[in-house]
Amino acid sequence: RILCSVCRNVWGYFPQNGRVMIYENQPGEFYGLRFLLEAKPLAAGGTHFVIPYVTASIIAVNILIFLVIEMFGSTYDSGLMLRFGAMFPPFVAEYHQWWRLFTAGFLHFGTAHLINNMLILYGIGERVEQIVGRFRMFAIYVVSLLGGSLCSYAAMLLTGQYAISAG
View 1 (tube, helix red, strand yellow):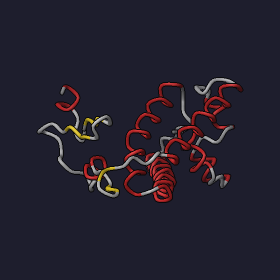
View 2 (view 1 turned 90 degrees about the horizontal axis):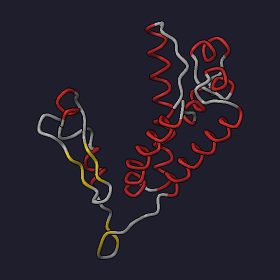
View 3 (view 1 turned 90 degrees about the vertical axis):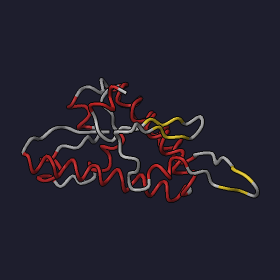
């Protein structure tokens, strides 16, 4: 409740019953997201559960990459993260390392960053994959990853405030 009183666009999601909790001062809808989170696909006569293979695989890849990087040093080390593909605008613009817009999405600065992102990915990804299917879930993930990276890249270029970004 405190968070909802000072922030906008805050919802609570309860995966055990597939419900979204929205306080009265929050928007009740956001481009159909509430429907996607609460929808239950029907199979012959009832609801069914689809094992979220794509979501679980993406989470496993993120954790594996995190563990590999940790073997080489700390994921809090900006230089190490750059070596593994974190996004930094001058590297993308001047050295044409466009692949960083993709690889940065699989890197995380520290355990808390990784855990937070993976919990959110599972909470939303499991439902989206159940509704739209595996192939579309993978496509949505890749497009979202690249879209987020491009927005971050553009914002840094426009403000002139560069940072090493990942996750």
